[in-house]
Length: 293
Image (tube, rainbow, N blue to C red; front, side, top):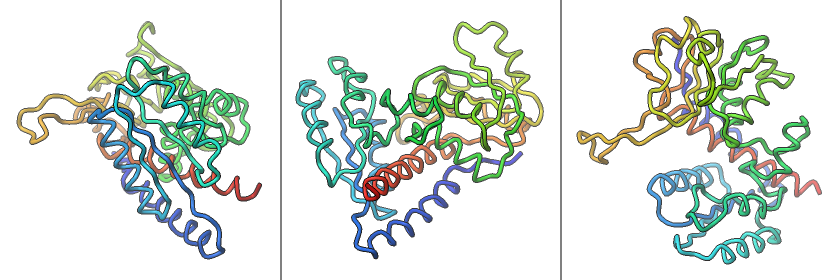
């Protein structure tokens, strides 16, 4: 069993980006600028946004964090996004989800200019991805592809079982893994809460992408020997022995499943760092596309 170490793979990507950003600056070009918007003070969101800002600093990007109270009127948030859309110094805009109930995430995503949609959620972005046209790939699915690429895992002809059908992970990764290329050229089965014989289907999977948000859902008897396991889930579970009062659990029962696998991601330290690396690559792409006109 080999661990798919997202910290290691993401660091390699950040090291490459750092060199490319330095070259931009050397030639007198603006460096990428990412603006993150955080509404409220959700603990997990605070952690994620802080990690994104830190990663920007590490590779030499400009980053701006805009905070709003969770009572902010939707119109005020949308007006800020429209302002950023027209700001020529801003390359990427991300609004950290989830949002308060009175704000429509769909409306927020639709308001972001697709040329600055570095999270890859805008309908125009998703449409291009489905058609195989050049675009920003949603950050978590893109991070999974980059992780498979880093470890030189050949996916051609493999059966990939995706558990979860969210617009953020499940659906995009199912499309990307079925696309031509490597990673890609898989036969993909998408499973969800209404799937019959889920365990039986999982046992046929050469690759299992677990993205349903249920701690330790995937058990050892659902995995065949030699499978490749990508655990996207990350849930805070109460743990009185921890200083924080919780520990992080993935969707896979790691201790039981790992011995059966050829490759597996840890939680934390697997897909999470790769999501941030993918976001940085999308932001760099947005910057260079703008400069190329």
